[in-house]
Every structure is written in C-alpha cells, then in structure tokens.
Image (tube, rainbow, N blue to C red; front, side, top):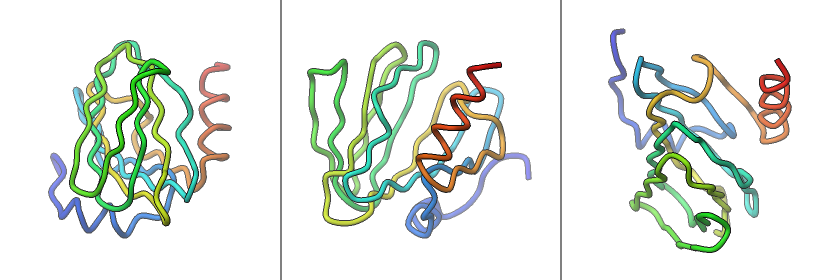
Length: 129
C-alpha cells in the first residue's frame, strides 16, 4: 500500500503494545501506543521532530519542559513542537490508548515494542551505535 488507510480509532483501541509503527513515509510516521496504569513515556525531546498525539481512551498528563502541565482525555489532541522536552503519564484508571504522528519519522519502519522496558532497551541500543 502506498500510504495508510484504516480506522485509526479501532486500530488504536485494539493495540496493547507500548509502541507499534503502522506507517512510515518520507516526512511523517504513524504510531499507536498503549501505556499501562501509571506508566509514562519518560521525559524526552526530539530536536528536529514535531509530534501530534490523539487520546482515544483514558486520561493523560502531558508535561512540557518539566513545568507546564496539561490533563488530556478521550478525543483530545496535543502537539509537541520540536525541541520541547515532554513526558506523557497515564493518570487514568485503566490503559491509556493513543496514536501519535511524528514529522519527520522518529523510529525505524516496522518497529514494535511490546513493553516500555523493551522500548527503552531498543532505544539505548540504537543510540549506542
């Protein structure tokens, strides 16, 4: 398939992996994510990547530059501009289901990280190269 066509809400809600890349193009990447209760992505920054998030299920706290906080619910979206430190924390009672679009892509095409621990290990190995 040339691009991505599908019901992104259903795809996001059925995903139980921490991170799964659905599509990678030259200038954008679509990724579904699932954070367990209390789990967070960890404070990170993408110096050359803008990031769009859409929450499909649950509640999250977004923290920008370690001081600005926003609580976000189902159906809401967040954009994190390049160069902004950010963290996403699942503050709801169950799993947090969301999708994100990186522009440009941020992960190798086809990436699947079943858990945050596996994602952290892969990121560490990738940056060690």
